[in-house]
Image (cartoon, rainbow, N blue to C red; front, side, top):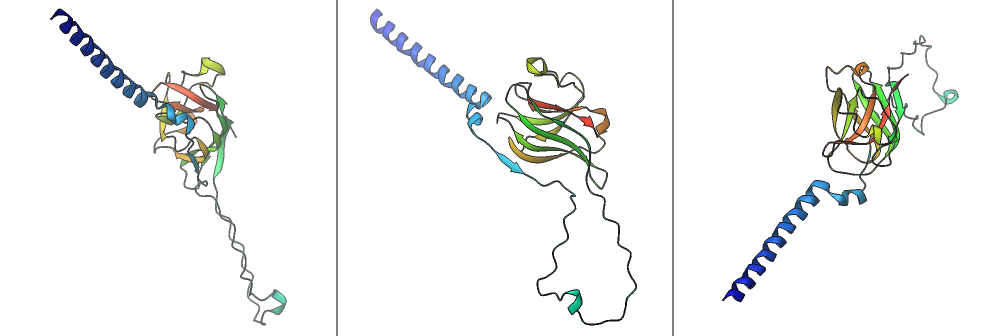
Length: 201
């Protein structure tokens, strides 16, 4: 009897341990999402408000010398070109926890709003990555991994893709002059993947 109880107890302990291991494994996979390190998401967006080039004249349009004669019309003054986006600050991304490259531009659009634009971004994928506009200094190495939530910051939303060129509008009422850096921030583990200091144009 004692042997049977011991065997059942042993098997029960193994079953409980196995169930706990499965739960821990599932939680770890959910939390760390390691597969994302091998998955790339590329997002390519054009800069909003960019002035498009005038379309070429149709191929069957007559050349000026071949056009039908017409009464001389008064010359029209050329209309001023619409104001396009203006870069007010920019910087190059440096690597923190993961190798990160690309350019960050703070752009003022014609309507007065601002966007943070990531250009030629190349970083690792990861769980819960965000784009933050912050007032923290950008530091090389591990000293700069965790500083961006120490002061003021504005989350501009989830990172759309770990590669490509993307736009992140500033929320209404945010004064861009109060911030001096941009980080690709992993909100789950409170660490910067990479960051750029913004130098005023």
